[in-house]
Image 1: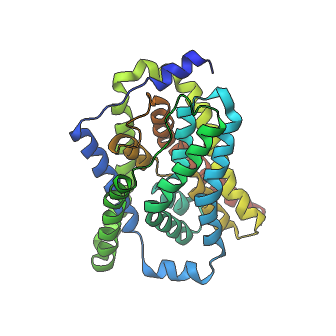
Image 2: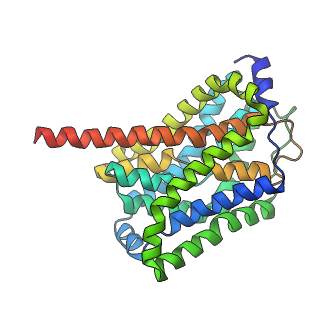
Image 3: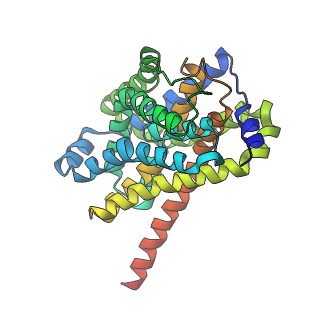
Length: 319
């Protein structure tokens, strides 16, 4: 990637008024509500009785993925701009995405493990997302030798805490209450909310970049490759760790899907709705990486799920 193209990407500017941010916030809250209504206490009991896959999944998402993303961003060197590298790290710092539960349910993965990992990483995101982004983001800026041109990354803790708590914490509590006291309503809402959240997110991505569509189309093939490599790393991390520690096939599939599907919508909210980057230069590279991840992980998740389904069919034919 040329320096000129990197500059074009970083100059992409997405500005949303209060109404636009409210729409994003509402969509994200509905997404987390949809995750929570699928949770049952019995799910956690079963998973915690055999905690090995759960511990491996948490290590993959909270430790390995941010670390490996930092290494990948450094290895990419001048092929990406510092803002793109930070975008990769921001995505890796986010909790699991809600569609991972849907992907797990159709692919023969351990749905109980998938839901548990989504719930726990989401609950921990109040602390882990800002911490991982601050830690690996600053290490990346220093290692990439751009500290002189990019301000030191400072996380406004209370600002981020309030954002994550309101958008993730409250909807999850409401979802759990719905599942507990209105189980029929929860079952009726689960699938429609998952589909609606996907459609809304895709719509928001398109709407956000309408004013910069020419610049976006010029850079999409480069962004596609970066996100493709990064997402493959995430999926491979989950599957590889599961294989290394010899967990069951359903558990391994859940680890693969959970690590490869991240809540990039939260990343967009943190960029557009907080003061993290108030002192930074144009950071369109972060926006494009984060937004495109949200599109691509739906495609890659379906592809991986299809591969698992075909594997099961081939096994059943050989028996």
